[in-house]
Image (cartoon, rainbow, N blue to C red; front, side, top):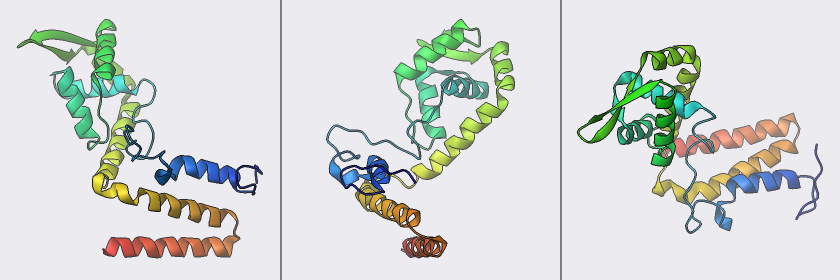
Length: 194
């Protein structure tokens, strides 16, 4: 086990620092900090490198759309957990148009984007990657159904419970780790019964 002497000087300081960075919601570093918008969902980023372009191509495969409409579709597909900005979507659409993967036309004063044959080929080539994006989006959608202002008050308690469980499991033998699992399962069952 890695030894790291930090503010507490013990063998679990490395874990304390890691857990604090994830869960220390009450110290002003979490979502209630003034001027800070909480991160949403089970990870820090919704899209990985190059995935916005695949997502947009995939959405355009369904039907032509203008930029704002694509932003709304991305939000819908993620259950509201991801909100694309114009600063993300429009430069990617311009890049796709420059690459010949989409074409645009003015319709009722709005630039509407259509998938080209080259765009369809790109989707076929990246089929598995695109499927993975939407599978992950479905997971975010499930997560998003449980998130909201009413749940913000339990984040600190959840973080402290998680931290305590990981620390107990890390310093315990197999028998005690099983006891940690029993405690967590009992807590989960009690919460589900509410």
